[in-house]
Length: 328
Ligand code: FAD
Image (cartoon, rainbow, N blue to C red; front, side, top):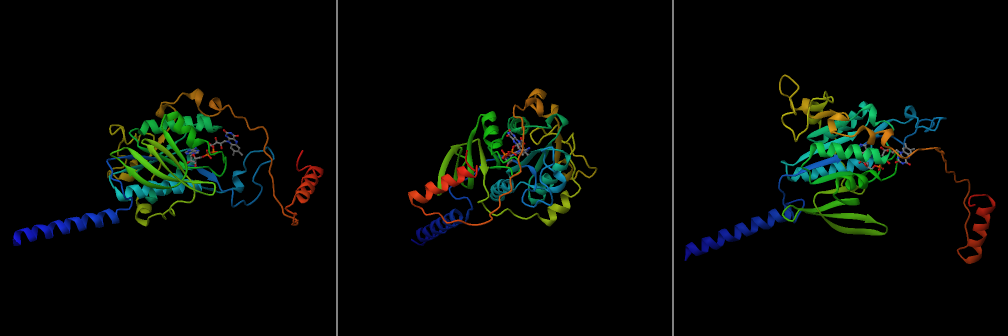
């Protein structure tokens, strides 16, 4: 009799613990197997803090007047990856950027926040890349890491502003994509399925997709975490090294420092041959887009006019806009 009562007591405690674990687990309804996450980040000129003319007379970006920053949307993609890793520390967060040597600064920021491995894809042959050539190079770099379930990136970069690189990269990888996401709600490894919340005009949309999937993030997600002081100390001297290899290729993934310090292998430098890319599809050679002219538009609101919302008011407004050549 008392044995049966004890058994019931144990069952009750186990049920209680399972409920507590279910409620406390940050991404409910999901459990994971080992997963590789790849995040794409871009270093961009800070178009929100212009300290001079944003464009040169030749129509190129005046980089001296625009300090370089971490593309804002990409911080949200990184945060989403790190939150998945927080819940499952065995998951590896790998970050890739394509850019000049100075772009290593954004990769360091990722290491300071908790990324495991970063790769700077850099070669003179990548210069002048449009979105097609950029997504091609990123696809090659992603394939070098390999074994990925999730590729996360920003919805759009604040310099080019095209929002094309994420979808084009997914297309080149031949995987599903979910764009303009504010939150990953659940990942079900058993079903190899992700549920994400997308922002759409006037509301949100819940979307499910099969892994592997590329997700582009907007700035409505979880607030990106600050850099960790300990990780900053660990990685502050990390520099890109061409023989760092890839996390998927332990033979080529060498310890550089004498003491086997993990910081030494956390940032790889990959050129065109390192990612097995075709030089003709990279940089200017692989870019069908030609920017012919850039017009710097400064919007000024000199005065405010209230328009009667009736037919007469709107007709009047249209005639006015045609007369001052805003239309036509
Ligand atoms: P987006 O597609 O807006 O970026 C989306 C996300 O993709 C980013 O948040 C980031 O996560 C990821 N990503 C983008 N670039 C990289 C990268 N280098 N490394 C890692 N992740 C990355 N290109 C065209 O094809 N057509 C044009 O008309 C055009 N016009 C331009 C006009 C101006 C003024 C400028 C400055 C550039 C223009 N470009 C154009 C070039 C284009 O900006 C670059 O090709 C750029 O590398 C990718 O486009 P994006 O910045 O619009 O990226």
